[in-house]
Image (cartoon, rainbow, N blue to C red; front, side):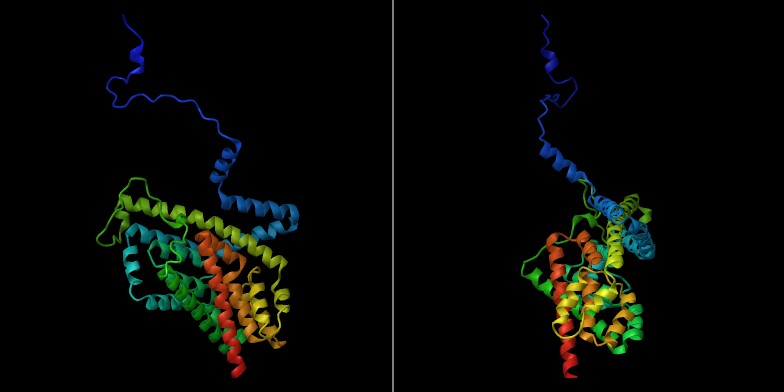
Amino acid sequence: METNASHSNPAVGSCCPKPVLAATPTVSIGTRVTTAWGRLDKPLLAIAVIVVGIALIQPNQLAPSLEFAGNALLNIAPWLILSICLAAYVSASRADRLIALAFTGRPTRMVIFAALIGAASPFCSCGVVPIVAGLIIAGVPLAPIMAFWMSSPLMDPTMFVMTAASLGLEFAVIKTVAAVVIGLFAGGVTHWLVRAKWINEVMRNAVAPKKCCGAKKAVAAKPVWKFWTSAESRGLFIDSVKTNGWFFLRWMVIAFLLESLMTAYLPAEKVTAWLGQGGGAIPLAIAIGIPSYLNGYAALPLVSGLIDLGMSQAVALAFLVGGGVTSIPAMVAVWALVKPRGFALYMVLAVSGSFLVSYAYAAFLSIR
């Protein structure tokens, strides 16, 4: 007599039994909320919150803020695109092996080289982010990355000329030296912390190219400069451009929207007017520079006028340096790239370095 037992057995020719259907577990509301929150695009949510907040609280500011952010993106777009494409090329051509080798050797030499190159590079605190991402992809150690990251926003050839024209050649040289010193200080301290194993990996994984699970990492004996001849390398290039381009675009929009609000409601004229002279004004200058964005070029004539009215040059240096590396747009850009402990390290080094160079300049002025 035929039974229905055969319906519970594996199908003919199948290597696996049919899965047994289990009852769907009950999912709590808290779990659902947590899952939904995890799937949200946080940078896009932040952009939406900022835009809606401006529209509700200060509707007249919405159009200027959007225009400001759009113009800022257009201005930085060439550098951003170039940096993202270079990072993708490094990844696709496996040139990261050569770049990593270029930053090997004695840590002192690497940090010095990074600090000097940073002071000579034409990148602002936001524009330097994709460059840093490329260095991360290339496998450069954290110490020279931090040295470059600190010195790059503070000085470039154009800024040197404008500073010399507005505040004098001596101040331009001092600010350049300050940028290099902050880079050396940050790189040296970071290297010591890494050697002491107090910090390890601090960069977010979002800047690294995506990899398929189970895929073996390709090992090339030498870089493949014409990466477009390989379908796999072309795919890696496109994937890197898409991933990093979308990543940085969202965070740059956030940074520039915040910058527009800082410029509109915390003018540099009022900020600098609060500063006088003396050692006690240096911490105040750095503290004010942290929440306020200060465009380096626009600030020069304002600072020059305040120096003529009696503000100490050391306080002016503290304000320019502190604002350059710890403003809100700069902090947003840093937060996008590093984990919380990396962000804390950046802020501690930035503030400490600003104190160091400002008080050193004040001491120099007092004994001259």
